[in-house]
Each structure stands twice: as C-alpha cells, then as structure tokens.
Amino acid sequence: MTKIIPFQKNKNKLWATAFLIKGKRCVANIYTSKCKAIEDCLWRQKEVNAYKHLLISNNQPVPHYYIITLHRSELPKNWKPLPALGFLLTTKYS
Image 1: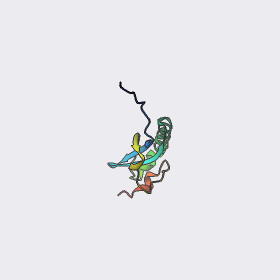
Image 2: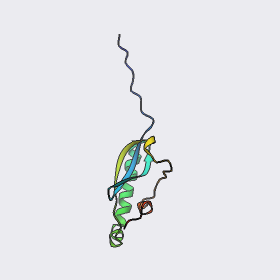
Image 3: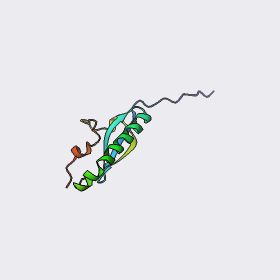
Image 4: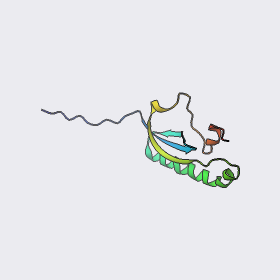
C-alpha cells in the first residue's frame, strides 16, 4: 500500500526585496510572506522614483527593485535591512 505524505512548507524559504545596481544584486529586506515583500518593493520603487532626477544629476546609479525567494542560509552573516535609498550606503560608485 502506498502512503501519501503531505507537502510541508520549507521554513527557511523567505521572500526578499532586492535591487540590482551595476550588475550587483543586494538584498534590501526579507519577509515571510510574498504580499509583504511586494508592498515593500512597490514602496521602494516609489521612493527611488521621487529622487530619480537628483540621483541622475549627481551621477548616481538608479537601482531596479524586484522580488526574489531565497533561503536563510543565502544571507551574508552580518546582513542588515536597508532603507529605501540604502543602496547609496552599500558601495561607493565611481
């Protein structure tokens, strides 16, 4: 007789708001639900759009925010959430 095993959620799976800037992916924030990650992504996109002209006039790259799934083990050891314009703090751009 075959036994049916119910599918269990992977507790290590997270939804993250990430951004891509000059070919480098950085995680801005993590969430346990996709809905919260989407809300955060939309908010970050609005904030960046509000400052887009200022960023361009100061030769700063404009990030592209998107949603990804990742496992807790994929986060760097000292990772911390970033504010909406936190990409300016992550790396110095020339």
